[in-house]
Image (tube, rainbow, N blue to C red; front, side, top):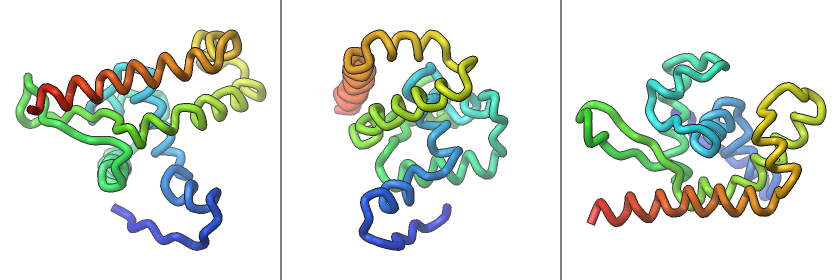
Length: 143
């Protein structure tokens, strides 16, 4: 796992130190917009992330508390990843990146973009509520 070195106190630089990597954003995308939640699931994404990079980025995201992992109830050697509240707080930024990307590359994520363009705030609120409920449910089941 690469160590994060902050180059300045600029908020943009600070943010990019954590989420400025293509693979980090794609893992977060999968956790927010798809049902992908395991190492194997992330490997099936169209971008074809290498196994060593995926393992490194998952460790980095977990070490910096954007995601958490739990042992799968079905398979003891499988981990299930989910967003933390810190990760969920990135939804508006990721939605804005999707809107910008769809403007210059229209074919991607048509249904999600259509929903966002119709009601961006409502879509963000729905995603946050869904993912926060999942976080709360996971926390309750751990007690």
